[in-house]
Length: 285
Image (cartoon, rainbow, N blue to C red; front, side):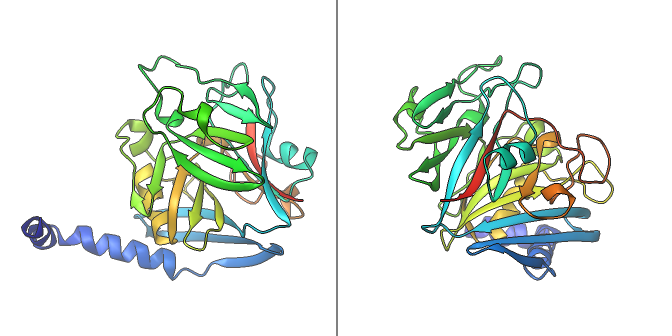
């Protein structure tokens, strides 16, 4: 193993240079930071001049301290679709991020969702043999606290997760600070807008959107996203539905609260929200 690392360093020095340069770009970036409410911070950075992964990128981050007066919840429609901002407003939330994968034509999640201890949607096979990648991890909310769980290879794993609210998604990106991504599909390797949830070393929950499909922000592959959350000091992270669904809404912010640049209208503005079937909510108790 040591010999392999030695050869990699001398035969492919550019790999190490790019990795170190990109990590420094993220860590040392001039992030805009503002307080949303006690325990909740909104951060944003636009990386220009192809400075991150040889590309322009726009990243929005909401960091939440898990404390008594703040709780997490799910916003879910069994069949209908709504914008992420509508979910947030209707639930009197502080913030909302789009959730897991859904049937674009008919509505409803294609992944298992439990809300207030009631199963709203079951997993759909959608042509997969076995369990889909986006059904191999879960956002678990128990008494308002959020955690991330990884599939244990059992057939009824989600049925035994301890929490009132459960949302399956994936793939999982980080587990115990280690890169856990094994997905080598084109979905994983191609650049798209991305949404994800992570938990950092301080046990704070981090909601992240990465915009894409625009010259101002290319979007990222899942391996690139995994590096971003690791450089941000996160210990665990799960991928959510992305693409045109990628939306982060924060109450009281300009542009009707949409802080990123959703791509569903193919414009660089805050108007391109796609209607979705579910979201993760941040609320005051």
